[in-house]
Image: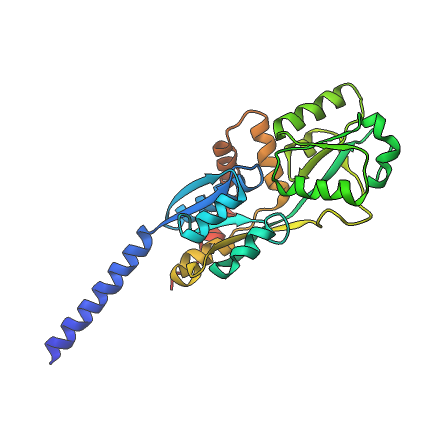
Length: 283
C-alpha cells in the first residue's frame, strides 16, 4: 500500500510539473489594429508576457470588424480595444462571446481640430467661417469611429462644410501644408497622436457633446480566456501605459525610429516597472 501511495504521489507531482511546463510554453496570440495608439500598447504587453515565460504572436488587422471576428472565432486570444465608444458596436454585438480582461490606458479623444492661430474655438462657429476653411473638413479613412462621429457632428450642427473622406496620410499633409502657409484648415484628428504634439492645433469645443468623452482602452479576450489562463490574465492586468507615453513613442517613430525600437527603448527605460508588473505568482 505504501508503495502504491508513493507511486501515486510521484505521478501527481509529475503531472503538476508537466502542467507547469505546459503553461510556461503556452503561446498567446494577440490581435492588434495597426494604429499608433494600439501598436505601442500591444508591443509593451507582448514584452511583459514574454518576460513572464510566454511565447507571443501578434496578428495585425486593418478593420474592427475583421479583428472582432478573429477574436470571437479564437484566431486571436486577446485584443486591445476602446469598447465604450470607438468600437462599442462591435463589442455590443459580440460581448456574449467575449470578456473584458483589464484596462490598459485611458484618454483617447477624437474630434475636429484647427490650428491655434485660427480665431474660432467651437464647432458652432464653423458655418460663419466656412469660406475660410474652403468649405471642407479634412477627414481620414472611411468607416473609422472618428469619421462616424465627425459625420454626426456635421449633421447635428447643420454644418455647411463638407466632410472629406481620405486617409490619415492625406489629412496630415493637408494639416502641415495649411500650417506652413498660416491658412485655415479643419481636420478630423485624435489624441494620442504625434500630430497633436508636433503641430500647434486645438480641438474645437463641442457644446452639443456629439463627440464621446475621453475613452479608455481595455484588453478583451475570447470568453473563458481568464479562466483558462489565470497567470497570463494577472500579468496582462498589471500592464498600464499612460497616454502621454503612447504619444511620446509615436513621436520617436515619426522622428525616424522603428516602432519596435521605440517600444524597446520605452521598456528598457521602465525596466524596474516591468519587473513589478511581472512579479505575479502563478496559481
